[in-house]
Image (cartoon, rainbow, N blue to C red):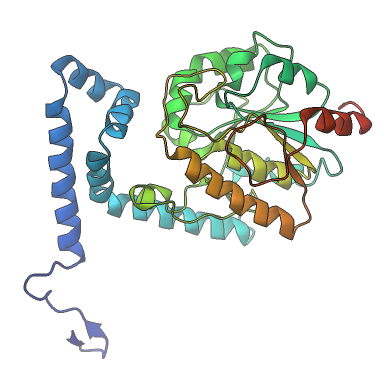
Length: 336
């Protein structure tokens, strides 16, 4: 490295045996292409055709071959890094007061439900229809496959969240039917879904920030952050429940009761209602790390969070019986 005409430093050629930034990118790209070719050659011709057409099948095929998945992520590193920097810049601008019409619906809701409790309902196998019936009078957030339970119970979540593109593909028809028949009052989707799919009228988009999770997914958990300003961004925590917790806090809810959040993917049955996308066995540990980050965030702000889930692996929050949480919500009176 030497000095240029203006006194600035000029990057010289990379030493022999080493690759500069562009060289590393080309190596990653070639490795990813080889990995993709290896994956497709390993599949039966019919499965290969389906993978090329159906992104869900491709994702599941990659999950069964973690080495190939790691190589593809490495090849896509420049793109993923650019996406992360773009999300950082957009969040910074909104935090500085920039107006974004896509997310302008959020600021009027900030603190609107202060003094009211709510349930954040996961889709773990411990959840049952009777639980949903018991929390009907209270405010609640539903996620993902909760939409499949609407035909079996009178419970209707006040807020419904979904942010995984592959889960959305599975549930798109059921979700559209529930929204059009007024079974869901509010459908909130991560902006990653809005970028890939045309959304029905009435769906609202929240600014999901994936941090470095797509970059470091193969080498651990990456960064965990919690947002106090959901107009600025909602941080990813490997689970849509993590986003629901941030939004519940932003809306002013407290205490927050978790229900159906088992965080245990080592069991044969991992969901209350399966939606066709199995999770790796170590997913629970990543999600629990996210809950630890949110619990620290909540304690700093005096926000009470309790776990009403029966069993499961989530031991981050204080546990209370569901009956106690229901009694607490009943003392507040029914929601309007």
